[in-house]
Image: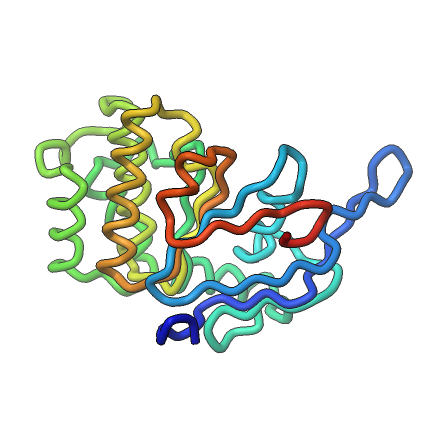
Length: 224
């Protein structure tokens, strides 16, 4: 428990190395981290410190060399590829710097895409996301007809449509100007609080990190 809230993510002793130029390079050297339900955590660190690697391991997009990742009662580090894919579909929300919207689908269909695949579509929650994200007048448009900020709002809404246990975001405002970044992140924080999921965001911006509940720094392969 953290401040009375249940823990949705626990990372213990996580290690990961890659081969580069014929040498083994240790990126993560025993990372420990936890995120509670409803809590927003900023993950900071210098370029190349392994922030994105850690996020990808938590999302099951890559496998760790050692240690354990637990999402609620699921041990991510022991799941098969199919199990990790199911976890991403049903219990994780993912937002990246690139919006990754489906160009052939309207805003409304992009928003509902993941929740429908997961069999967890909720009309009332869908409409609340539309209202809170200010997308009501854009539902019939296609991604190419939207600004960057509007596209990222759709990406956040899609990620939260399943009411995931945890929202993972990797530099989600990296392609946005400062004012739009502030607005989009404020909306994300509001919706995270409303849905009760945990929120872990990779960012290089100390200013944006300071707006979240807690900041952790990844340095020399461990959480400082």
